[in-house]
Length: 217
Image (cartoon, rainbow, N blue to C red):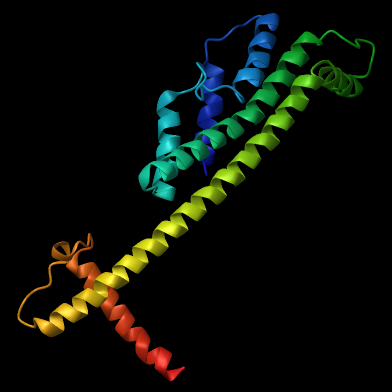
């Protein structure tokens, strides 16, 4: 859902953050992000751009066009879940970056190419719990996204079916009225319909065009 530009902006914003600069401070900050950034109730971390987040949410609202409280809540949940999922790669990179600084002096007698792999392995072993937690949280967030997407699809399909049924009822009333009152313009609101006359006439035309095809079949 989010564009490459948004992801890049997220990463740039994280780089510009005035967070801790010491090795221990960076490590603590990264681990706190792992704990609270993916599981906490607060979606936006202090280092993140609020305007970018709002644009992200607006993109979801534009794409899904929710109607009613339930649909709006699900779309908000989808946007927040995606925001957290986009955070995971940056957190993983941050943990490895902190680990490389922490263990930069290890294995001085090894060949440089081998030494890099040894340091990476040491970082993984030292921060294995946090890295595994990232994977667990990613899977949890993906399941949440699938659940919310299915619930939203069901709600919207039900709403669209209800809207279509009501529009067809308006068409039937329109046809009946125009036959009985050929000199009077049909007013949908008078019969409790929220559709415009143009919408009703277009649907009537579509149904009229479909009837010959159905008869021919």
